[in-house]
Structure formats: C-alpha cells, structure tokens
Image 1 (cartoon, rainbow, N blue to C red):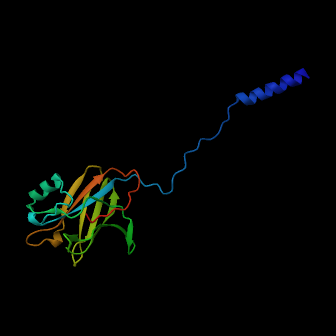
Image 2 (cartoon, rainbow, N blue to C red):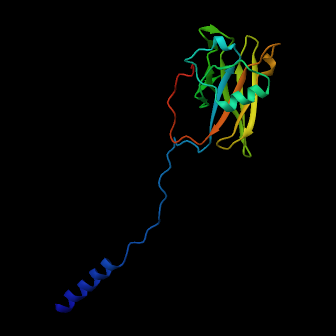
Length: 186
C-alpha cells in the first residue's frame, strides 16, 4: 500500500513539473482597424483684396504666403482651415471629402469643392480637388507621401487676368484613431 501511495505521488509530481506546451497565437486583428497611411490635409486659398479679409478667417501659414508671393500673388486669404481628406462621402461610386462650400464672406464664389486621394503608390501620393466654378474645374497635386511634405498648386483653368485660386496640400503622420466629422466651412 505504501508503494502504491508513493507511486501515485510520483505520477502527480510529474504532471505538476511538466509544463504545458501549446502553440502561441497572435492577438486578433480588428476588422475595422485603419491602415497606417499618412494623413493628407488640404486648404483652399482664395485671392482677395486685403481690405476684404475677415479677421475670423483661418490663417495663411508663412510658407504658403512666401510661395504665393514668389508667384506674384500678393492678395489672398484662407477660405478654409486644414481639411483632412477622409473620403467619408460617396457620389456616383467615387469616395471623396467635402472641402469647401464655395462661400466667402457670405457670398458664393462658384461651386463647392471636394477632394480625394486618387493614387498612393511607390512613396508618392496624388490628390485631386474638383469643383470651383459653374464650369467644372479640377487641380491635381502630386507629392512624396512623407509627413511634413507640403505643396501649393494653382487652379490654372480658372486663371483670369488677375488671379487663380490655390490649393495647399500637407502630408501629416497617420491618424491614431478615426477623426470625427468637422465643419470644413471655416
């Protein structure tokens, strides 16, 4: 009986000492997780006389002002703040972001402007903004897809004797979480 007791203790001790060997598992991936892509921001710059500038309007950053002055444009204002292209709306099968309602100082300046990321490949990104006037116009900006890269572009097809409107594009780091929809009118 003592031998049976000692044998059972030996068997139980072996189970207690032998570690459980199992296969490691990766944590489950969230199905709604965002890809880690850099965020793209756009800002509409509208040519206007300095006396017509609204003090509550968004600022024109110094790098934008310097670029515009190099291009011979001295009268301008920001029609929008920085708008992230989230492409959260859809029209006729295309995803886009409403960027500007085309009003400035309570007056209509043409058709609303929408933006979209049309291509992202090989370290480059191509942004398209459409709208602008009753006669549909667009501007495409292509730049490196790296945080801190920035560019401005004129909407050349709208260029009159005096001015074209401009688009500023800025690449930021990937968003940590989805942004809430905001009012892009300012």
